[in-house]
Length: 354
Image 1 (cartoon, rainbow, N blue to C red):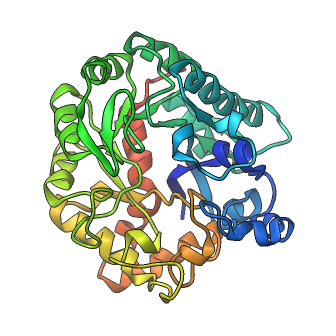
Image 2: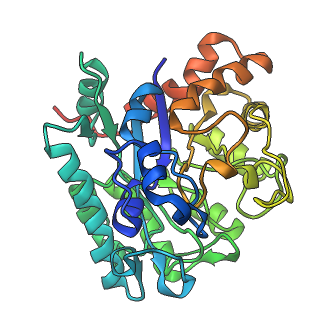
Image 3: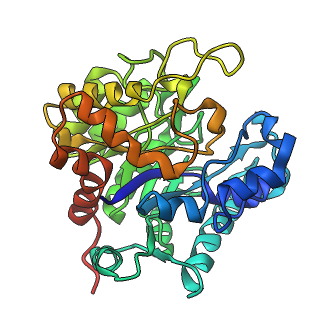
């Protein structure tokens, strides 16, 4: 079984708090000790040995930055926070260059995927590498919409408009439509061949962006509002619109996004079966299991203490097969949801290459 994870903040964690994705998550936990109790950190869940043990073959590593006014508690704010578009571009390039260095070093099992040919090479390799499909989470590193092709040439294949709000779009907890620049950026992404990620987009900007974008979109890491209400999640109409365009939605195993009112202090872990419920709801609304996948966002501001019961590290993602079977998915459907749906989508939407 091949696992594909549609959302991991590897670069932010490396540059912002010193977590090297080549290390074991358990080794990082031991090294960090009580640092894991800091806000927006948690017990580390992602490391190379755990990815390999879990059969993770492809990930979408992000360029994730925070605005300085968000006051995220990071060790190296100059590397992952910004005020101006130029600062955002510099920080975004630092993360992308980190991924490229990992992929260029033959001692590492990481490989960049920019084309269908790259994807096929990763999947066909005897010694299984881990393929990187770079995803920009929040479009502020794109200084002007005309720079979209530049980022494509650099290796970015997916762009999300927002985290909270950006210069381009309303976002989680900061609602609003696309800005004038956003209305120029979305068609520019389309023309450049960049996949649009609608996770974190505000309600107004979500539907406005869909009207301006012709390719299939995705939501790399989003759960249904039916499972857990809030503007961070997708309404049924949002799910239908993504699925109708041939898009894919990555479900997130994060307690706060699976159970309304869950808090780290005082609430028991959410059952892993709740992830299967979220995925099942997506498939029922979409009318097809091909719209469902995984976008774990592990170590994306939360750790093992905030993950569902039985999910200690990324090595445990294959356990989702058990709970998916319990809600009547077949083996073939489970293999699709845990990996093949993302692979199919990439084959259909990456450039051919050679």
